[in-house]
Image (tube, rainbow, N blue to C red; front, side, top):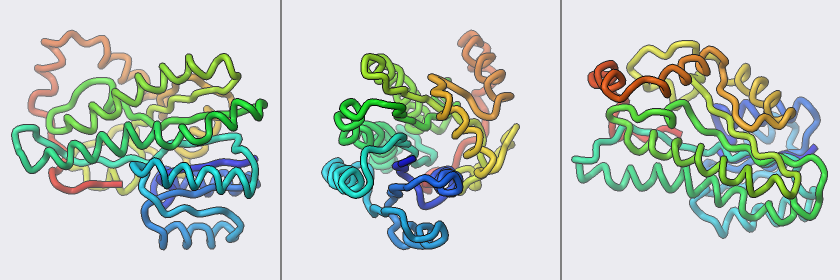
Length: 255
């Protein structure tokens, strides 16, 4: 098995890398921090390919994809996991650059990750998966998190469109919608995070959904119930419940 993962240097990406390496997979590991990738590769035996790049750099991703395919073959699974988060307020002009950075990384970065692999996966046939990591934050807008919520809502819609496009070619598009996972991204949250699970546990559950080609899955499952309730709430009630919700800290971008 061959698996390419972005955002692999920490959190969910690192946990997925550890899981798939344990299954004997050959990995392409991508993240901005080359030193962290090198350390992870060493931990996993040193035989995997690492690519220190930013997912907003589409040409760099194209080069990485071509290198991985040339060395190991077409991946069975491509996981667009790279994402960043920060509290943002639109009325603060200094937050506009942060808003753009979040949208570029979380939305454009996902498309840039998939783009250089699709033609090769279509030609190769067999069991292929394009996996996008969304978030329950994309289901309803939360105060103080305009950019992050918007990015994850866009990701969910983007993956749905892509799923329809790829059906003809037999490529499964898997949308994974995590609740709270214990990672550096959630470590800064100053509010209660129900049903939180560890990154290694999340990786196992993600891998199961990927294996079975689940079109859309919320993990952990209790958050799926919460998500369904949130989607059904009328606007007036949702506003009343969440108007004064605790905000994510501004100015600190978390990978």
